[in-house]
Length: 269
Ligand SMILES: [Zn+2]
Ligand SMILES: [Zn+2]
Image (cartoon, rainbow, N blue to C red; front, side, top):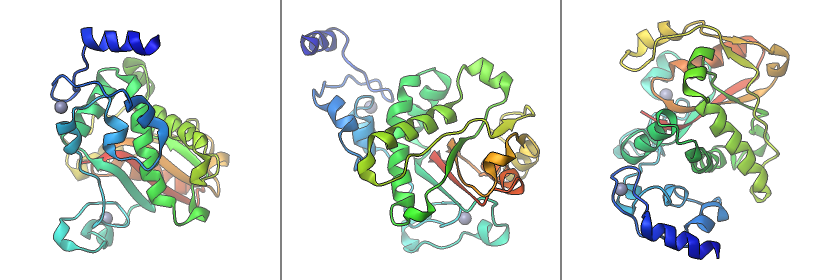
């Protein structure tokens, strides 16, 4: 019965691609596909929301890259190697990885999620992040992080937006991991109460690397150092641009006694 109603609804209100607004042909298997497997591509996570042309547009953030900050190099560089920035001024975090490049359809999806209140996108995006998490830690079970910490928003911005996108992503990642014990990862937990954004900063958009660093300096506080002490922490955020925000978080977490801080974002600019 539900399927009939759904088919009927699709006929009257056909789905449109979130990126190009093209009408999409309904695929009856797409709901099942969404959570059936973790060996998924961007296409499998996102095929309810994007047409096939926009799905093809996705660029994964993959090798050749900088093993530390995750900067993606041009394909001709062939091998992973440290980038110039990481040689000159190494970050406080141990490694940063992202699912894809912040362009095209992925960029549009993230903006819809963040600024147009499309909170339902948190689940497929969380799945995409779990896929990247899997790639980060699959060969090294002993290095799996103890806690996931979403990059906090200042209370005023949180009140205006109504939700913290990083917290939703971290929560979905932890939930989806629990539903996939076959991955062999221990139960992960998200703790949004370790870090606090104590100072309101101007948006980082439009600022260069140095200004971003100054803008974000001392914007965070570790409110529960006992929870961070000796822990391997994975910071979660939506977009990595120059890394100034996550590096500042990593700096104070390490100062508070964290053993290691990694970074996972949906996209990198
Ligand atoms: Zn499209
Ligand atoms: Zn680097």
